[in-house]
Image (cartoon, rainbow, N blue to C red; front, side, top):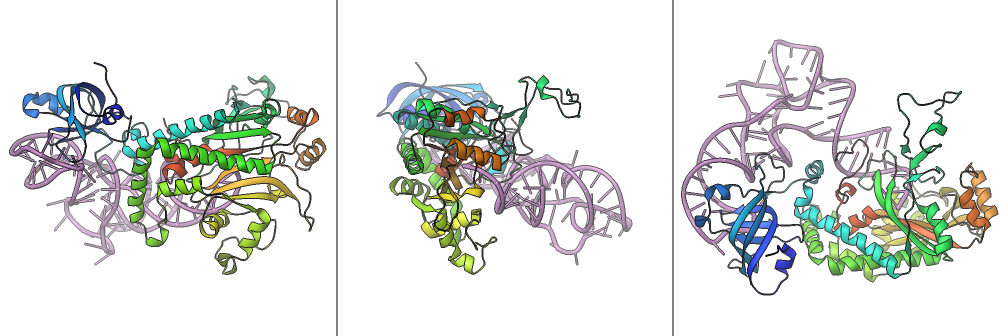
Length: 481
RNA sequence: UCCUCUUUAGCUCAGUUGGUUAGAGCAUCUGACUGUUAAUCAGAGGGUCCUUAGUUCGAGCCUAAGAAGAGGAGCCA
């Protein structure tokens, strides 16, 4: 008799003579009812023990968290909470769980406490649902790109270029930290290091992805990314997973179309395939929100929010239009913003983004054509506007509750313009010779974007802290597990 | 990095003006009960009050320094 999963047993029609199942005990009620979970679904299966006929010492070992093997008969349940249950014939404890010390109790825990017990937190309903969704979203990402003719490219994790400008980097070195080889001027001599030069963990696969876009046409990367920023927020990690498509012969408008279509596709996928987990998280969130004052509650449930994104077009607004809206909005006029918007050229703070998304448009917003001087060197320069202001073909997609979900741009394909920009920003041409080669040999319009995978998981699961949507979060002062 | 808050039982938290033996709910254990849905009822055990230094006759409470965690800001994805 082969063992089945809880998901298989619960989804099957009718009763079964002989079933075998293995899992972990969630609760053991009235010395008779074991709620068993094996991770295959948010739901438990109820195993009914006729305790008069079982050894008392064995029943004592059925504690929260214990791994057990049950065989018996799958029958219609006499109780109300479930349609089927297993009448237990044999029961083996595969692994005991000491109830005095097992940290996961059959009660509510705070996410902070569970974070400190991250190795066990997926034994709770919320975290098992979040991580199944994470897995499912991850699959949906690959599925989307695969079905749309993209090639999956593995960009290097150790990078030799430090010109990406996406943030502080983690150094990678094999040198002795206490006694490194030195140059005559006292600086560390990286020529003697493993790679013969300074190397770092990647902050973005974009530049390398561009090289493949300029040969394979449509590519994407989906891998770990590292930022050594000392960011202490609910939206930042030092190690996170980023999705970065890059497409040749595609302009900024095409880039926006791609990003929007992509988001809608992966969200549709989980709506269809992760219904039970989403319903559980939806329910959890609604109970959470009941504790909040009315004004802070959202007017849509989790599933409604996801459906809303799938069913509605993202609002596309140029930076210049956004500035006009912000300049004339109530919080700006009443000086409620911490940073008041006075003139064109100001960088948007998260309070402004939040106003646009959550108050003004009330839907995902794509902002594009940002001032050139607040964006990266590789973004395609537009012709100056009527007032002589310079913008680049950059776009950010802003989501309610999350903020920036996507950042992307059309890339500067003109060699002379790119060189000039790099010179102005003091970026060494020699470092990026290969990047410049793309503009020398067969250059073409191309575009791409980066999407923080964890932020997508946050939006989909309704979790408020990015540390709760990745198995083992890496943040400043924390690399436990 | 900056600002604010928090740190007391396994967990979530009370703890009055500085004053006798530091409390509650849940969890755990023991017993009762046994078709329960976070079962119920009765009882019991469980404390480095984050650390260090200080003020005081006396500190969970006051002062200083430090540590850890959370929220917000900045940066960004």
